[in-house]
Length: 190
Length: 195
Image (cartoon, rainbow over all chains, first blue to last red; front, side, top):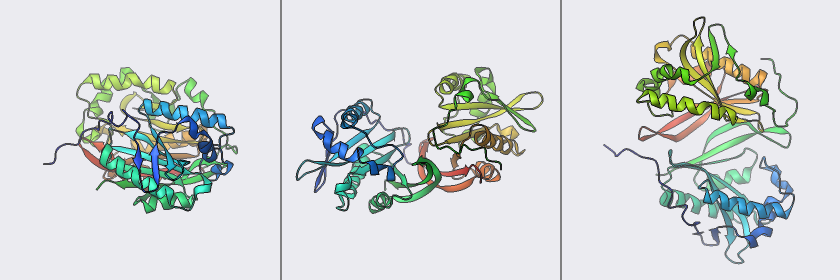
């Protein structure tokens, strides 16, 4: 009989901020000098086309966000990677592990890419590496990602990374004064 | 179903539902605030492996497990995280199970629902009656737009309750929870206000 599966101990993961590497990208902790790049993503008003939170109104909020991200890591709540391009060390987007549940060996994945970097496959490259990291190094069993049904690019990233559409949550969120539905994608460790 | 939904998409003000615990009533049931005084009745279902095999919480081993859960309930309510009801039979108030709301999102006008019934009372339509009332309350009183719930893939009774209440299956969450040492797959259901 197979050994009983017990909750994960992830304390090791939170000792030092992890650094992941792919062919073109480094996923790393965000630092003060990334503020402008981070604002390019979080401050883009068109972010509302796809997510229910509002664009940052000023660069100060992006600066505060870097602090909030550091706190979240320290509290073992979430890991928000800055996705840096190797060629110039610019932050092109973010990739976040959140709702991490050691009890159920599962977590959720969120990601966003500044508009200027769309269409190069950066996010697919980053998410593939994060999935590998979660499965192989964290011992996670199930990874979920949720996006608005109209966010085709985000859906494609999930699909290209081997995630399967499991659920469509009808009228699950309010964004820009209307109800929007969410797709839930997931991948299970083999 | 009449829709008293706000025309506004602003966050809902739910404060009045958390100032004083709501009490709901159906033909055969009263849904009231659950308290530590219900510990023995909670233990009656919480210690029954036939019941807990489909529940996210471990089987209660002693009354202390039930008391511990109940002691956490007022804090969850004060933080507006959860609203937990005792399901009681009219007219004598016999406690038969519990139910409630969690993941309450005023921003997105939605919440989730959970429920459990003592095995001695299965098969009488009590839970369908309670869940139907919870849905009506969420829509008509709280102005929610969406009520969702999950159950284990093989929890046929729970799925039937949701289907009888008009909830629609939205998908399957594979290996969603680790329970008693193994991964279990969940079904997820929802109903929208006005449908």
